[in-house]
Length: 179
Image 1: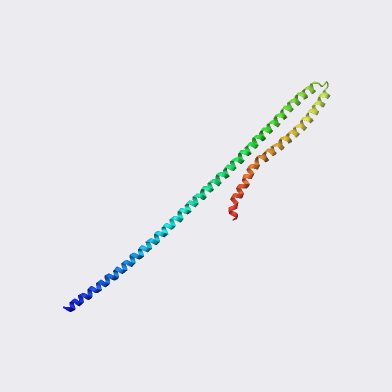
Image 2: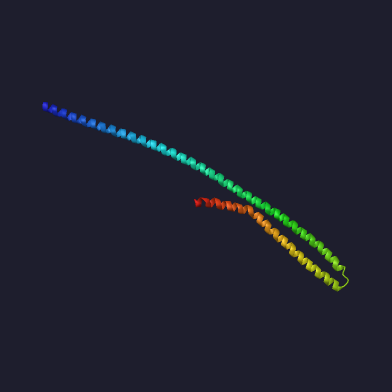
């Protein structure tokens, strides 16, 4: 019976040793899992924090970009308004020049009619008519040149604000490409 007790005791010791080893293994595994979970949690918190900071920065950059675009577009609209004002002023000046030309032409026509009606012979009529045609042609060329010069000047002045904005846009959009 001692052999049976000894065998039973040996079996019990082996079972206890196996249970103790299993317990140690389980504690080690639980401890390793807990450490891994804590480390994973810390990494997740850090990653989340970095993503939130990046998102906030991107939002700030986007808002700054929006402000830049809004300011850029405002300047474009200002240039268009300035150009339109110059065109309107030019059109007003052109109309005044045209009105002065039309008024002078009417006065010249009245004077020409009086001159022709005051002629006593056909030769006088022909001479007066020749002088009127030559004078009218010279005046037409002179006034046309004035109107042409004024048109070019108005077009150049009206284009300056827009050309300036085009230059700014080209510089702004090609600058990132150069770097």
